[in-house]
Length: 366
Image 1 (cartoon, rainbow, N blue to C red):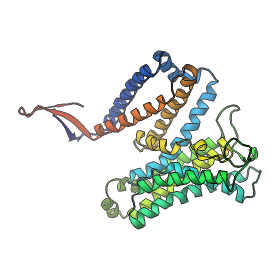
Image 2 (image 1 turned 135 degrees about the horizontal axis):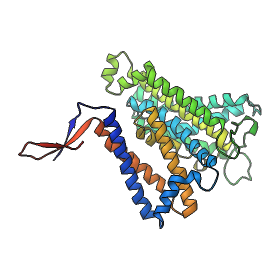
Image 3 (image 1 turned 90 degrees about the horizontal axis):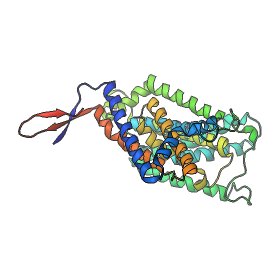
Image 4 (image 1 turned 45 degrees about the vertical axis):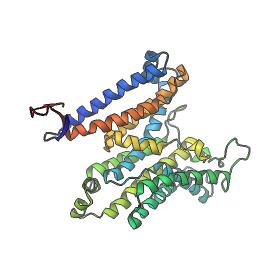
């Protein structure tokens, strides 16, 4: 029979080995998926791997990858703060939506300005919106011991309905539009495109800078140490002089801020207006949960996981347009990667042995 035994020799190599095993499992399953879903699996796999150098200009394709990577990475690193401390905020999609709503509200409060000076204030309004929405499940957890996993998830649907209501009600724009939406913001206050014809814009720079700053805080400051302590037990956290309730507040505040910032940048850079929820929300908040765990809750891992998933998503869309392969293949690969990385993560802390029973001998499988 199989038995898990705690490792006494855990090292960087054991962690790297488990990651390589997970990548191998993901690659094998991905190939099998392509074989089943495509009449030309070899061509589909090649196009998925090499799509930036096919069709449109390379910078256009990489611009799409960078765009998704930025949104996923900034939301995921915010969520990882809480996950490290066993605070389960899975409502980033709602905080993203309210971040967009807050940014548009800031635009209206400022009097619908047209100068570039207003952009920082609009983004700040989005951050505040995301924070306020995230503090609702935090308050319920601290004051009533309500399960934050459930409350944060339910608030996603409240936020999406609120977004749609604003688009069909108080903030309704052009009635001739084919969908419920607000009036657009002027181009003059939107993030500037860095490379014409691509998705590279200053909004992505803002997101990547915010990611780097937060990563540095988590890796090299007392806050990062505090979260590592909280990851074990509340008792250990109290022994280290930290308050578990304050950790809940802080975790939701940071994750709400990052999701709100992403929502504000998305509003100003991608759409320029609010749109009914089903046509506006791209599930960045839910995908970021997967990214956080694929990256082992580490900033570098999160960035690499965000790039990998974004590359697969954009590549799957290209393969769909080129060969007619359903782009849901990207979702299958994403789920496979998640299960592979989570299942092999135990190899970092445990070795698997096969016990032969009466012989009392075992064989290491590591």
